[in-house]
Length: 470
Image (cartoon, rainbow, N blue to C red; front, side, top):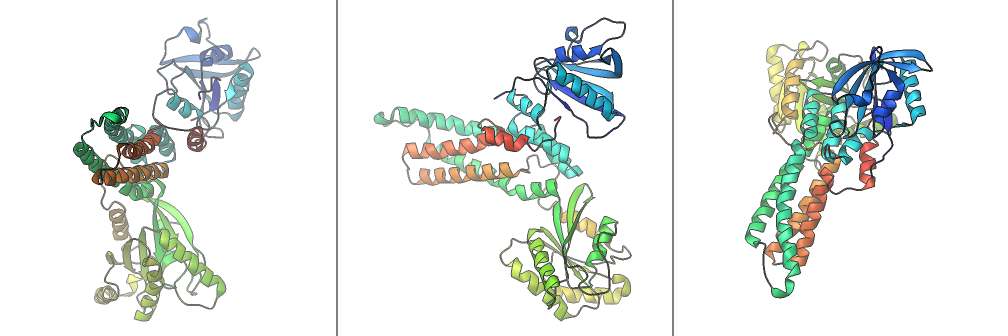
């Protein structure tokens, strides 16, 4: 599966900058670099140098100086890819970058495909498949929380847990396979009691990993927060206040927001994806009605809901908003619900507290109640603290293993289903060959996560989403 071409690519972001870096990897990487450079006054060759060293050199083009560069030399297997690897740090001119690439291709290198450097690292045993995906997540991480989870995955925290589970199952499947070889002699090598205990324990661990996906996916892609409520309750003003930008149009005219508006912001190291929705009310306006329906779909996707209520909102308007949400809520898992009494600057403390208590009686199942002023900023700090509290509910920074990848979630779910069948088979004294089939299936799905079992399609789906040069 390993391509033996020597590959090259620009590994820094596009455009010009102070410094750019070009990577070369493969059996001819050092030889190709030697063809491009000269070491002024030294007469040395890069091929004669030790690995893990830096060298000043000049890039020459038809006898003329193109640039002064630093070469980072890594020799197999002690490199990122496990192959000979040279990194050329040059000045960031686009002209220089493209000229060096042109010289390398003329010398015999080929342009790397997206993710090919990391793919070679996987194929050469420098990392497993889950760790390779952690590299992509690390590059894409947009918050401290996403960065923390990606670092843990890249360093093998998740892989170690999966390999441990798989190793214990392999020990038992080998004994069961041995029983199948001696089936005519009616012998039992695998202790069924111990196998049942192991199955129960692994299912429990898989349940823990599977349940962590909702949190991990939210940390990776942004916690979805829907801002909902009646018209003119201040939803768009709150979005603008949180984003510190005039993202949404604000107007006293009811029904101004006719479609959902989304944007992200990092609060306390966690990325949130805020969704401003159309005001909830019955209307004959077809466009506004369509906007409300789209808003309700966004509500379904949100894990946190901020229900905005204006100070002059009567009980009917509040209940009307809740009626819209209740239709969707019946089929949805519990969401964190924050009741926000907006425009608190228009109320004195007594009226503010009285209004909040009244809202509690109308909607007692809310998780949090607070008063704020989206226009003046009052209560925004408290709201942000509540959002962080809800985003991290049930999880701590010390939690080592969190599932962030949909592919891993699906594989873990399939492995759990197979082991559940094995558990039922043990309880009903299922024939050994059928029991072995369920355990083999669980091993297959666990092996898919780390790449111990893989296909070209899986590799293509993963590495094609990488950036070129990584």
